[in-house]
Image (cartoon, rainbow, N blue to C red; front, side):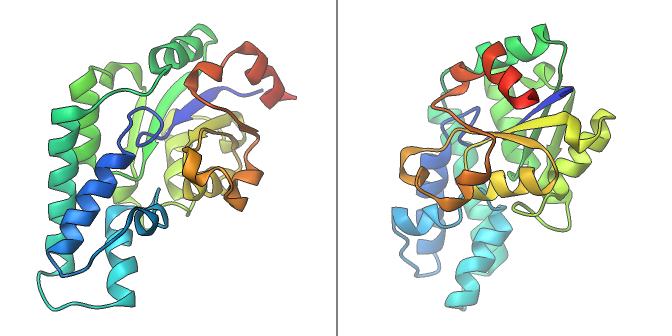
Amino acid sequence: MLRALIFDMDGVLIDSEPFWHEAETAGFALAGRRLTREDCLKTTGLRVDAVVDYWYSRSPWESPSPGEVESAIVARVIALVLERGALKPGVERALDFARSAGLRIALASSSPSAIIDAVLGRFGLRSRFEVIHSAEGEPHGKPHPGVYIHTAERLGVRPGECAAVEDSPNGVLAAKAAGMRCIAIPEPALRGHPWLGIADAVVDSLDDIDEALWSRLED
């Protein structure tokens, strides 16, 4: 029996992927690198340090430092969240469903704590989660399963008793590698990605998380 529902944040609770694309484009421009939207999609779901490492390893630059590029990206994402952030459809409904079903509720995000704090504070959601865990404290970010395994540990449940809600292929891989069920809500540009095929359910929005879907996950 499933006992917990663990939410990713970016692209699941908040429509922040465009903010990440804008912030990455601006951040890498400081280093003289021009990224397209397609480039940004390649690293969706990764920690910001992994995103910077991904591009630096392919074409190193001299200045600013990778750490400075990372800091610029994070600062820009936070500014955009506070300025234009909007919740994805169905957030309150999905959280209410989980609570009414007696499920433990947690957040497991690749974003650094500063961005998580900005999002949860902006929308008053902090009290809705029993555990909030950032992959910034993990040795490895998604698609490594560590953030999900340790979130389950903090909830006091086994990974096999959890379902995760993800939007990115990297996130789906992380959840499944942790031994969890996974509900994928991918953005249209990523719907054809082969890794999404390992999700236990692929739905259009959080509004689709209901008793019928939950029963399918538990079968």
